[in-house]
Structures are given as C-alpha cells and as structure tokens.
Amino acid sequence: QVFRDALLNERLMPSARIRAIEVLTELFDGVPPTRAPLVAKAASPQIRSRLAWSLGRAPFEDLGYVLPPLALDGHPMVRRSALESMTDRVNFMTAGDLLKVLPQNFAYRDERVREAAARLAAILPDSAWTNLVADIEKQSIQARLTLVLATIWRSPGQEVHPGALIAATSILE
Image (cartoon, rainbow, N blue to C red):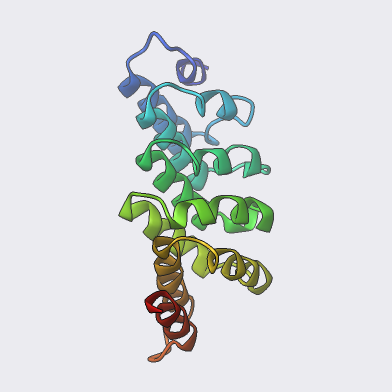
C-alpha cells in the first residue's frame, strides 16, 4: 500500500515516485490500472516515462487508454518509452490505437522517437500497415523517411526492399 500511495504523492521527490513504480513493477503486479491514468498526468516527465516503461513490463488488460496518450506526450523521453512499451505489448493494443500515434511520431523532432515509432510500425498487422503507408505518403519528408526505415525493418531478411526504394524515390522527386 505504501508504494501505491507514493505513486500519487506530489510532495515526494520524483525519484521516490519513480522507485515506487519500479518496486510495484518488479515485485508486485505493476502499477494498478486505477492509478495508472492518474500517474500519467504527473508533472515530471521522468515519472510519466517510467510509468510507460512499467506498462510494457507489467501490463493490464486495457492499455489503450493509458499508453497512446503517453506516446503523444510533449516530452520525447515519455514518447519513446510509451512507443517501446507499445511495441513490447502490441497484442494489448488495437490497430486504431497504433494508427492514432504512429503518424505524429514518424515526423517527431527527436530521432529516438522516430526510431521507436518505426520499430512499432514494422510489426503492424498487414491491414494496419497498409493504412499507415497510405497516410504517411501524404505527410512530410521526415515522416516518409521514417516509413522507409520501418519498411526495411518489416522484412529484415530481404537484401532489396522494393517498397523502401519506391518510397525513397518518391521523396527525391
């Protein structure tokens, strides 16, 4: 109970709240589903980022209402952690959840966020991938370059990636 209470205690230093998240994740069943949305609103990006990490390690049934908003957070560390957790727990997410966050992260200013988004996109089901490609083709050059990376990662065994070549060529035109 002490660790659960620490999650929401704004008087504690962020490091203590982060440690509470880690203890709940490693020793118990993770951050309780009732508290996760409240922790996701913490002022500290370090706390929000650690929450996103925790949800990838100790998920609960409906992550769709906590992780996607974190993947659109204003801080790149929070976004990256959320995207990595979504990749780890993709089977807990709906295609709609994924397609809401990927386009915005494909064009995000931080390289690590874009890479995390490309890794997540690379494992999308075919129908969601098709929808993502159609959406990204209308986006910025940076988003389309991230799509090229995701395309290559989608089939790592191939030496030549026709889809990536087509996308890269369209960027140069």
